Length: 130
Image 1 (tube, rainbow, N blue to C red):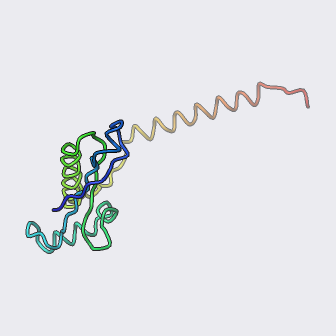
Image 2 (image 1 turned 45 degrees about the vertical axis):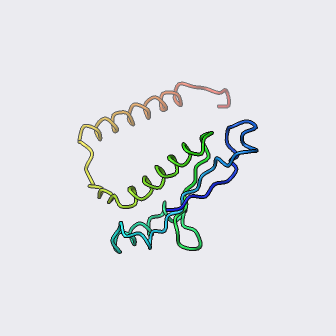
Image 3 (image 1 turned 90 degrees about the vertical axis):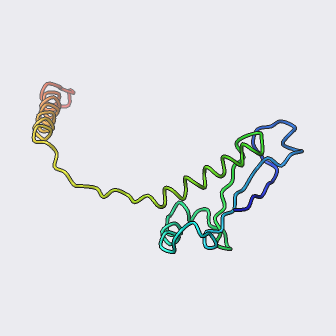
């Protein structure tokens, strides 16, 4: 993991013009021994991670929300951690369910009520054209 700094466009007043508070964390996933080959494949195929993959294949995440470089560094590391954790967390399969019978009855009752209300407007209203 390497860190790059740059001048931030975020808050900081005149400090923005002097201090490099923006931090970018660059993580070389393929050189990391922390993950298996299968896990690395899962991480790289994640659509959220693909937004952060650079042309050299490394993952880059930046932060410039805070005024201090240290806080931006911690925030960027937190973002990278969340990105990788979310990529490795399997999505739960959706189990199709049937709506309860009372929901369908209530929908039909409401539909009939709206229909009767509109029918009453049509029959009870005369616009003088007849």
